[in-house]
Image (cartoon, rainbow, N blue to C red; front, side):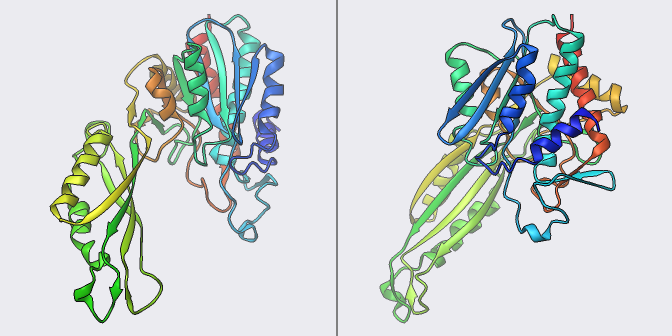
Length: 376
């Protein structure tokens, strides 16, 4: 059994449903401390965060990941228990196998091998792991970054181990992510009897025009690195439960996944303008999950592309597709942030799995990245 596979199985066996770490970070700390890492356990609220750093000089290279996982769904639909790591047909099955306990295991083993051959490496290498990525993401990486910034501990390069590959390991890396802006729209009508619509104002009917305008709006055309901004409504609620009552209000929740062509303020302003055109009474509560970021060509991007090419002979694709990640909290500090990991085909699914052979490939690539950036 390879060291990466062995460690991955240990981590999968920890039922770390977000925001519970379930002992994963203790396992990681015990591997890193003998290598000269300074271990800091940063707990905020119910969330465990691990900051482990070796060295005090710049440049600072950070592996970023998360130990928490999403719920398993119906366990009777799994072919093996989700927290009982199982190998079948060359694949390792278990919740978190792809997202992202295998990635964390590859980071640890790559670090161990690198330090064994480079005990006096340049700069510093660190691991940042949270148990709050799959949940609300309010007491995880964002809080750790605030702590690091307060003591002027600046990250130069950050490799996020999220599963980025599409069909073959190494075929895609994320050089940025779109921003995410949520809105909760409350449309106000007048409640009344369904037989007397002249004495009421039905917010469901009133929503037709705003819905049409918001859905048809072209928010931007994207750019070289980002697709066009999208607007999607995820939930609509109205009604009292009775069949003879016109409701008094409607609530709609929507989301923008936006490119660098827009700012949150611009999107908010345009939504308000469209709604005001419809002459409806409304309120909106806004929640910004993250702003878009883009890492342009630099030392980290060059090292990752070279390492992937050397191990897989693939010219990786540079992408910004997908949802948000914890990289959004690191990028505003000025760090180069890139996401690269295993295949994402089964993440959050029943029978989540990774190809066993890919574990060693990923470990080797991570090791090469360290060599390219920090070896003397």
